[in-house]
Length: 75
Image (cartoon, rainbow, N blue to C red; front, side, top):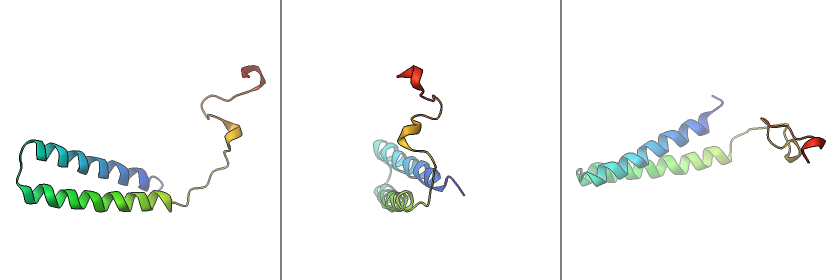
């Protein structure tokens, strides 16, 4: 899957926001605790996955933004 790190980041964000919401509503401590631990494990795995992703591109900083090509008239 090409966007696996992005999917992991979305799942991690949802878990950690869910922890915040559940702790606001005073849900039982064990549920919040285990969800926090799972969220932290997901966060570490997500960072590892992003940093070790074998993504290659031919773009350089000279290409600037892909949606707005820069030319001599824009300088």
